[in-house]
Length: 150
Image (cartoon, rainbow, N blue to C red; front, side, top):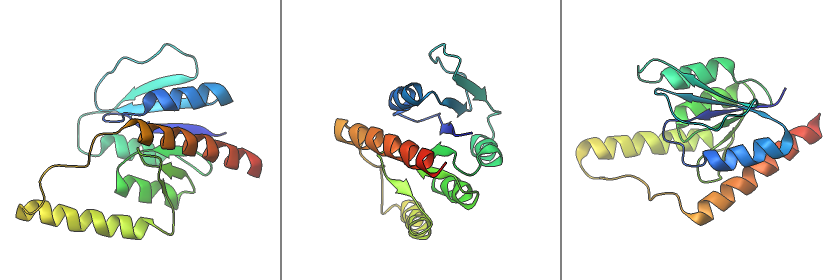
């Protein structure tokens, strides 16, 4: 069964996920460290995990399987889910793949080191309309590709 798992705490594209899931009749599980308001739909559920670091990531990684879709900007979580055969999309419509996850992990490590040194401050720019559109298109494309394989 094709399910969508969302690392939901800081996910700005939840409305786009809802649109695609509703269109295709898919179930969505939002995983968060805190309660949040979500639409009341049978196909949508919220799982609140304890507040420990990586608790949401661990929950998703333990359940996501082949042909599920994981939505997250967390690169280590993406690597864990790719290893299980899940499709993983970032929050701007990019796809993590076996070909690019190593580079993404290395870049993450480098940026973390530069932040520790004080060379890099701040984070990425906020999600804009073009990012939302790209994400919506990529999610729709990913769902259709997985369904074609079955």
